[in-house]
Amino acid sequence: MSDFIIAPSILSANFAALGDEVDKVIASGADWVHFDVMDNHYVPNLTIGPLVCEALRKHGVTAPIDVHLMVKPVDRIIPDFAKAGATYITFHPEASEHVDRSLQLIRDHGCKSGLVFNPATPLDVLEYAIEKVDMILLMSVNPGFGGQKFIPYVLDKARAARKIIDASGRTDIRLEIDGGVSPANIREIAEAGVDTFVSGSALFGKANSSDANRYDTILSEF
Ligand code: DX5
Ligand code: ZN
Image 1 (tube, helix red, strand yellow):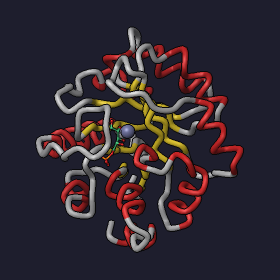
Image 2 (cartoon, helix red, strand yellow; image 1 turned 180 degrees about the vertical axis):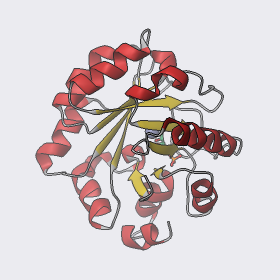
Image 3 (cartoon, protein in one colour; image 1 turned 60 degrees about the vertical axis):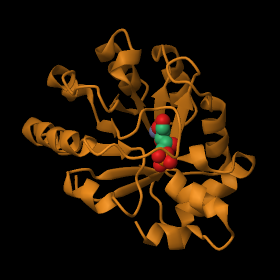
Image 4 (tube, rainbow, N blue to C red; image 1 turned 45 degrees about the vertical axis):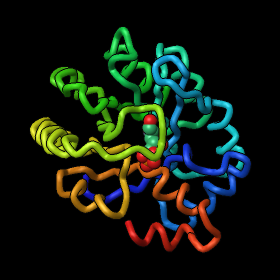
């Protein structure tokens, strides 16, 4: 899988105008919508759920919606997100009692599945689960908040994850990174084997900081 994907995280968007924000960023060249779901239990923050995902679809958003679940437990919310129009659903293995079952549940509901690894979480679970994974998401910050600093050792992990994907022969698996991504480090991250980039504060955050910051200008720097 070689085409690069930019997935703006709506966590840094203006929620009072979310539909327009998403329309603008997609029209400016972004590929996916990264949708951060936090439950104030698995992570210390509370965000949005299936209703908002469904509202974006009803608003006319056709871009893939990449739902990043930072919730525990994960299984009971999966059917709701599938119904709400999610394309990818990813979850943290620590948050599921039965990782294989959760991955299968995502696929059974017609979505693409993925596992998310916190910075210090090893990739071990992929040894067996890779068959049921369509995306590997590496956190390059600790989950819970936008605007944090990129943790550099995750670059080594990206190289390791790329090797695992290559060895599996599953060339369709995407390798995504999330946290602290900006035009300043995106090249280095891509060189480590990542093909899918989440960006929140460097994109929506910057665009909302001043009228002079247009999405097409900001995106062209990526
Ligand atoms: C953090 C979220 C990220 C976050 C990225 O828990 O998963 O998607 O919004 O934001 P930035 O790009 O600002 O680090
Ligand atoms: Zn995320």
